[in-house]
Length: 348
Ligand code: UD1
Image (cartoon, rainbow, N blue to C red; front, side, top):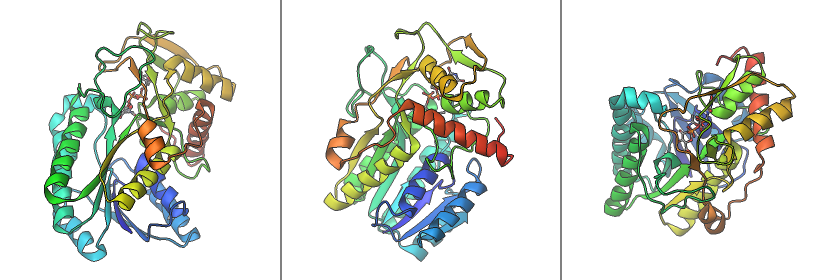
């Protein structure tokens, strides 16, 4: 299959591409990346190039914006893609509150344009990168798990744009026949287990990355946002999924949809929750560094509790996670931050 990956220089997409390039699935013949490098990294695309040539795979990177319809159309003409994996998006929640139009343009308008072109060019499958943060937190109690049919209630423009895109994709699939895979991510964390690629976005607010950077002295302290949540230790609980396991989930889910010519929605998480304090303590224990932690106010918009019911992904497509261990996730996040420091790319 020929695949177009939008946002392919970014964190999650680059791990999916690596997974494909190292031959974990033989269904792919050509990977084409379109990325404007606004948050993605040239270092990452260069590394993907190397991985492709080591594995004798066809990989091509184009610097460009998904909103540039003429350019995207020229790629669709040239490569006749079977699949589009659409990752390019804006994804910072506070920014989405301050500048919602940026999010409605970058996420919703660009998805509509891309879908329109995909349908016109008879692309068969559309994979969409979505979020678990659109699930409602009302009437949720500690120990519950969120299945795909859990009520939806996006509470910020970012989550709303992802939910709107999901509905648009479903409507287009019903009307025009394009098949979709929608993946709702829980908390993606860690880095490539071989430490070749990782999360490279500057100013990240991601807990695991902030913890690794604080352990390395790149930040002078870590603030825990809120200690009065209705959880056993008072801090928020999340389901942290290693990015390499998330990558394999993409390929398993896509292969299933291709095999059965169906459309599917999957939660991506392990089904285990860890509190912010547990993550911080694991990072401290693994590194042996007792970095400075302070306790602050709740961060606006944070749900207390978000843990996946990933039964569907495991039972339907046979996804078998390999790194379901919070220490492995912490270690890979730390190793990658140290590498960024060595490469002199290690800014907070
Ligand atoms: C993450 C994703 C979001 C996705 C959602 C799905 C990131 C940046 N955000 O949001 O896009 O839709 O999962 O579940 O990946 N925390 C601290 N101190 C810090 C940083 C974080 O206490 O310095 C806490 C937060 O308050 C939160 C938890 O750690 O309770 C996780 O935060 P974060 O890593 O930012 O992810 P989410 O906000 O859950």
